[in-house]
Amino acid sequence: MAKYKLEYIWLDGYTPLASLRSKTQIKEYASFPTLAELPNWGFDGSSTQQAEGKSSDIVLKPVAVFPDSTRKNGVLVMCECYQHTGVASPSNSRATIPDDPDTWFGFEQEYFMYKDGRPLGFPEGGYPAPQGPYYTGVGYKNVGCVAREIVEKHIDICLDAGINLEGINAEVAKGQWEFQIFGKGSKSAADQMWVARYILTRLCEGYGIDIEWRCKPILAPFNQPLDWNGSGMHANFSTKYMREVGGKEYFEKLMEAFNKYRDEHIAVYGPENHLRLTGLHETQSIDKFSYGVADRGASIRVPHSFVNNGYKGYLEDRRPNSAADPYLVAGRILKTVQTVPTK
Ligand code: ADP
Ligand code: MN
Ligand code: MN
Ligand code: MN
Ligand code: MN
Image (cartoon, rainbow, N blue to C red; front, top):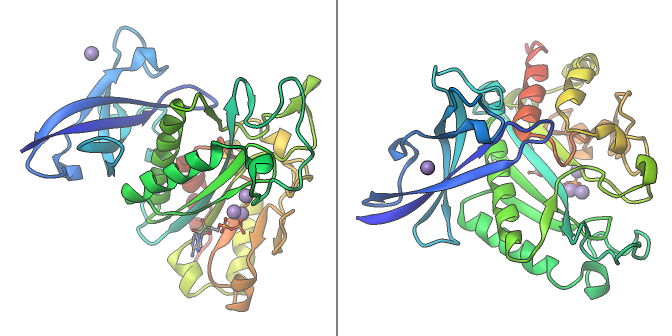
């Protein structure tokens, strides 16, 4: 028997930007615990905007489990929140995703590292050299001296956890980075994304750095966007039908459905997205829907491979922003896809 540190992780009730919360309980197991061996737990929802003071207990239900190599006998336990009546909490966005083991998602998470209230590498009260050398950049003047150390540790902790982190790159703005997460099963990539966000946020504590998830943090006075890229969370998706049958006719019906539900998509694609989806900086504007082959200015980018394979494969919805909840994004995309009949 050994004592395991179980870190229960959940989303709080803050809107429009939920934060991660977590707490540890120690339990004895003969070996690394399986999901079925992890008990429900609870917390005081009145402290997280998830309950009134009078009846404040919220139930934590484990839904995914990952090894935590940063702690001896560490376990990361992603949880859903339920009220004591058994009804999902309003903050439980995971409960909105239709179950489908054959839907795959790949999310590209962009983010800024922030130190002393500004992007890492920005001089106090000013701006660094304009964008250009930072994207996929190398060298102290482009990426500074701790960012890469953090990013490297993040990769290793995620891989140790069994998270399908597929890659990283320095992004267009200074202090901006990206990582990609892939998962098979409609909820898997989003579970892994939230845990990868948790790992990165916690890792940065020791560096005096916070992660800025908001999509357009660098603004001039009066909220005027400057010539600095915002952060997205492009959502790549495919269902079994898209991968194996597809076809031009089905694709066009799919795009009609995405056009029809444009507002429903935008509603869950992250706060302040009007600041980012402007039609500039490789985005489509927020009130338009468009798609195009290899078009990074479209709402949905159709990869060359998709067309070359007879309209089969995955599509990239470029609209979700860096602060969006991947549970809501995955749920909305799958709901829209499911409105289109397959033959
Ligand atoms: P880019 O920056 O050119 O848009 P990335 O390489 O950053 O491309 O991201 C591509 C994403 O597509 C990855 O997250 C990958 O996991 C995902 N992906 C690849 N194939 C599929 C698929 N069949 N279904 C869903 N997602 C996929
Ligand atoms: Mn207590
Ligand atoms: Mn990318
Ligand atoms: Mn990117
Ligand atoms: Mn992309």
